[in-house]
Length: 237
Image (cartoon, rainbow, N blue to C red; front, side, top):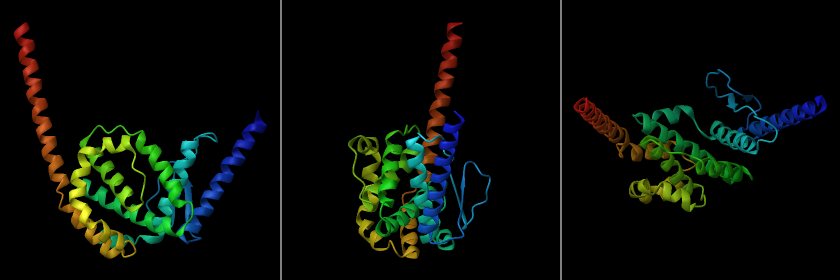
């Protein structure tokens, strides 16, 4: 029994060592530190944090760590924090879409440079998105945006089930981005121009304002329904 535990421990440590080596290679920095698990660390250009290994037989966990390690390493190498901050749009949702677009830009560059990176990221992303339960409009917008950019930038395969899930948002995204996709692709290696253009496109969608209006309308309807139910309850007493 103890022998099996030792073997599992050795396998996990070997996997962590391999991931750490990969991170340093992709990020092109020997100074990068890799942490596994919930570490209370301030963001640093010299470190990345990855999920803890849940078990040697957890394939999904292994795939997640590989994909996140590749993606975070690429951002460390190809994304300039100062430039990224310069064009950051206002609004919570707009910011999230903006940082997703930068992540995908870096993954696009990495897919061209490193064999296996695209496969690792796509394999995990397809599994992750197939299991999503999109309950809020905000989640649907964010996930629809990422799915749309991935299919356009990284040539991810369209999945019919996923396409159906995001159908209501795809048209709006196509109307906004379709004419600019080629221009964005041509700017992949020019972070300054890419960040500037994608920020303008995202801001012009007024997503945060629309979501806020939707929330107000939902709250209004819930309040109305609650009052109606109270009145019905009193009438029965």
